[in-house]
Length: 114
Figure 1: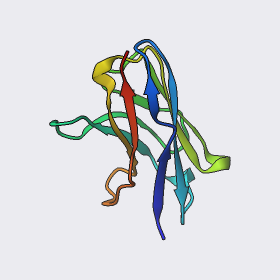
Figure 2: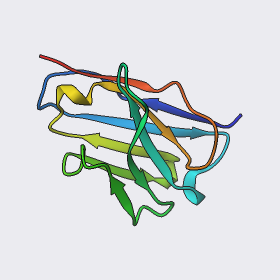
Figure 3: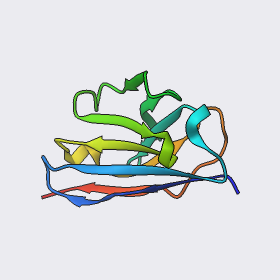
């Protein structure tokens, strides 16, 4: 079955760091761009970052630019999101997705609180 499995979330203090992973199952990622999305309580799901198939092109939402870094390891069929200088407003469930494909994983919870 085609799946994307997010992991790496948790509870961190403001200013802390986490690295999220997006692992593909049932297909290989090397031909596809991957986007990271998040949904905070009471808010719409938003795209925060995207990386092309080779890893040479990346984009970031203004809210995370300079703090988050997206990368990929196609040999391990995984895309990463390194999150530094975390703020309480980063608290959300984080998802990864192939642009244009209509399926989502369960997401991973990130909570930033002192």
